[in-house]
Image 1: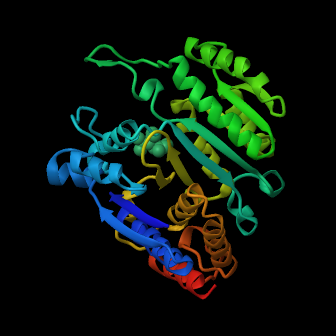
Image 2: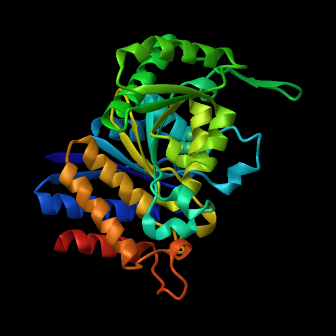
Length: 353
Ligand code: IPM
Ligand code: MG
């Protein structure tokens, strides 16, 4: 294949992990005889500083013309505690999702045997947990009508039938490819928007007779996720619930630095770690590049390059087994490896494979 990749490194640790992701893409392409070219573009606080817009038109064009976007992170503490800021780095991410029509965010929650002890949950609960959260990404409160003055503010949680149908379809299809168990997460006991979700899910379920479909309130789902994560196979939910539940999901694995995601929809797909920009770690070479590297595995798998994806996953497992790990998951007394060293080790592994 001939891959045209848009690289959006963003803020904080973004640029450091981005380099490692690009290194892995290049190594895999070389190994499997694919051509690859990169176009770099700015976003987030970096782009606000440079051009005053967190997702400039030029960046949008670069994304639109690419086959895939490798995205890292946006966010900067300068904006976090300023509720009056007119423009925020996160708006760049939201604009990218909306403009590229990325309505389906696929967030796999995987565990690694050698890291079970890193999870705040008991080993026996975590061992073998493996599910996918499918988060609706371009609707709901994030994009609904908003209002804010000094005394009153609201965000509207609006969903239309086509928006709900297309994301539920993704959910049912993933369930068919996996263990045929779909959990629709909502708050139908309180929210009208959730009742429409549930109604449509119930209408669609008979089209997938092999799938066991269950319905769970989001409060209950958040509890079940830590009581019995192995209950879940595929979960599908709206934008805000998915945002919250996937941070919880990332804890199950033991480090936020491990979980990748893919955002897909109408235009160029985006592959990004689920963690943020971790500004405190910026430039310190301590950020875990694995979530970004596993996002690269998802990128190849999206284009049906299964062996490529598998090799990346094998390299990641091998690095963990060899204790080539960043500090937050390193074993006691283990050698020090930074972002660059872990990335380089994985690139070397791929080259030698
Ligand atoms: C995520 C992030 C974003 C979101 C932020 C950075 C806007 O938390 O991708 O989960 O809320 O969607
Ligand atoms: Mg989030």
